[in-house]
Image 1 (cartoon, rainbow, N blue to C red):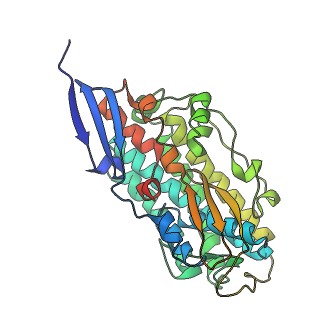
Image 2 (cartoon, one colour):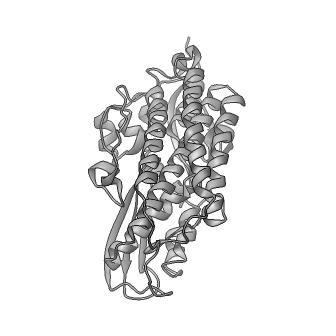
Image 3 (tube, rainbow, N blue to C red):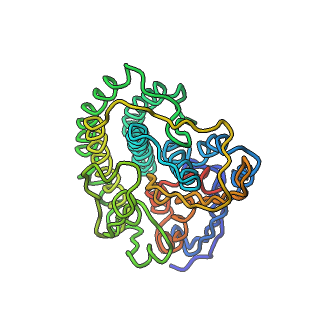
Length: 365
C-alpha cells in the first residue's frame, strides 16, 4: 500500500540515540527510506582546549571524550606524548596500563551489551546485570586513583601511582566471578529466540564497506576481518600475552553483540596473564613537572573498546601541544548509517544504533 512520505526528527534527546544525537529520518509507513545524522550538540572543543593546557593537563580532557572508557583514552594520549618525547615507561607501569585498559574494555562492553538489550525491549534486568559487574570495575578504578569515571590515571612516562594492597585480592575476586557472569549472560541472551529474530541478518555490512569507511573495532571484526591493533601493531606489553581476536561472519547486529561478549572473555585472559607476569618496580619516569617535548609530531593509537583511537600531536617546544587532533572511532563508526538503516523498520533502526555502541562525547569531542 502506498503512503505519503513523512520526515521526522528522532532526537536529539531520546533514550535510543545514546546521547545528544539527532536523526532526521524519512519514513514510508514504518520503513526508513531516508536518513540524515546530525550531531554537534555536545561539542566541547577538546582539541582546541588542548592547545591551552600543559601536556599533563590534557589528560583530563581525554577522560571526557569516551567517558565509558576513560582509561583507553588516557592510554592513547600518553602513548602519543611518549612517542613525541622518545621515552619508554617502566615495565611495571606498562602492565598496570594494560590491566586498566582491559578492565575498561570490559566495562565499556558491558554498557554496550546492556543498552543493546535495553533497546531490544528487555527493559531492566539484563542492563542491571551488566551494571552490577561494571560497578565492581569502577570500585577497582577508585582504588587505583580515587575516581570512578573521569580517571586521569595514566601519566606521560607511567601511571599516577602504584596499586594499593587491597587492589589485587579485589581484582582476583572479580576475575573469578566475571567468568560465571559471562556464562550467565550467554545463557540468557546468545540463543534467545527474540534476540536472534531481531538481530540476525539485520543491518549487515561487508568487510569492504567497513574498510572503505575506515571503520574499526568490533563493528569491523563482526564482518570477519581480523584487525586488532593489540596484535597487528602491539604497544605496551601486549606482545607478552596470548589471546585470540574474536570475529564474526555476517557483520550484522547479532555478530556485533557476540564479538563484544567474546572480547570480554579474552580481556579476562589478558588481565590474568598480566597479574602472573607483573613484577615490582617503578611505575613512573622522573620527568619534569612541565614537559617540553622537542619540536616534532607523533601519532599514538590504541585499540579502544570501540575501535582505533588515535591522538596526533604537534609540538613547537613549548609546554602545550601546538596542535592536537583526535581520531575518534565512535564518529567514524557512524559513517555507514545509511547503508545499515535505510530499508529497515524504525524498530530495527533503534536496535542497530544500540549495536554500534557509540558515545557522543567522543563523536563531538
